[in-house]
Image 1 (cartoon, rainbow, N blue to C red):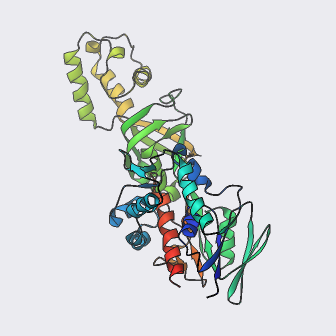
Image 2: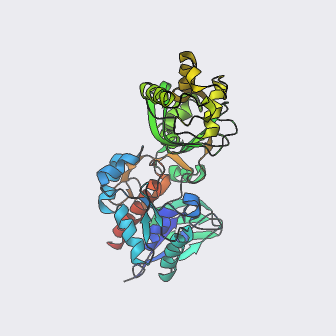
Length: 402
């Protein structure tokens, strides 16, 4: 039987995982990657450790982490989910581990292990990987596709389009007839200039609550003060779920932050109990709430309360000001910064135009799409990669069955 040709446009997670699962006896496969290295996002993910996936093994639960694509991914995850990802890598001698927050990493703590496994699999199959190859056009010529690039033309019986969501890629796919939902950033940190945060970079809060009244959005979880403002899961979740609304606001809005993650009554009770038990302590040396000493001193400074003041002489008015700064601190957000581990966008190819049984295009014959080029994205924690692995695997199974 004559081997057919597959061209995979994009050497990222989805494209490479698809190639790693294709049958080398049936196909000649060429991966075209515009950068000098493949799998670049995999390399930097999780601070260089690669957050491969997330320990959520029920597809119905797993889809809840995807602001866009949750309905469509249900059938995808029924075919290949996080447990299957763990199995795939373990079969190839790469054990993965589940950390306390349910994120999945390689036991080696190195993204290179994940990259090497996929690259070796593709090499073993004698598939071709062309880096620094920019695709300029894809044209349908009778039964085949011609993929035009900076290094020549490639003929393909099948195309797998897994480019990510760069404007150039979206334009290519639009020219082929697909509808595009305009891409906007998702998973970003909030830029805030506020005295509460100044010079406190690295300070974290385990159970913060953040709300944006304008969007009727609330989120809770760990939060981190950065050089630019606020980050951490609580912020990143909001940025994912409200990506389009925040873009419409041009990233200018007010947020209400509860650094303690408890309600006002509980905070008052904790303070009063501490005061009764430690009446001789100064307010500055009182470890009342689960915050760092530096942050506590900043709150007292903002509240215009002297650090040396005895805790028993704090007036009820002063207490309300202190608690207000801790429990309902209103800040102006004026812009966003990229979350460095996972630059993700909301937007891409309209999902109605994809057959999610096999990730094929409903518009183009013998054409598949996967990864971030689709209007699918997730919160942080390994979910975006899991969608890539699942989609890539499904495409490979469909092609192997042809």
